[in-house]
Image (tube, rainbow, N blue to C red; front, top):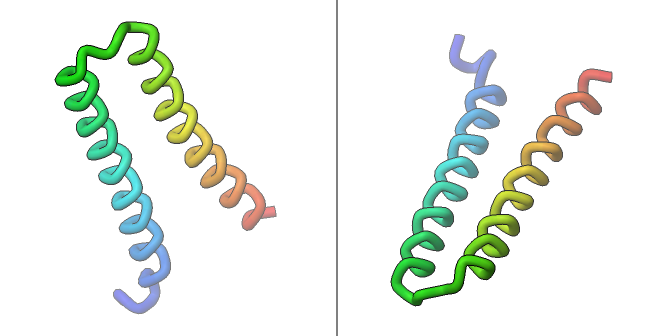
Length: 70
């Protein structure tokens, strides 16, 4: 039974790893911004870049799923 779902389990594990990686990056960026007294404008730019990275990854996954099902 496990052999039937190996590919799906690997895919879910990979996506969970990416989610954990983005979470850890966010926490480390938050820590660096707190310690270095970055102005609010700079903080907004940093968070916008991180947000666009996450959104781009999500769009890539959605497009890949749609492309494979078509």
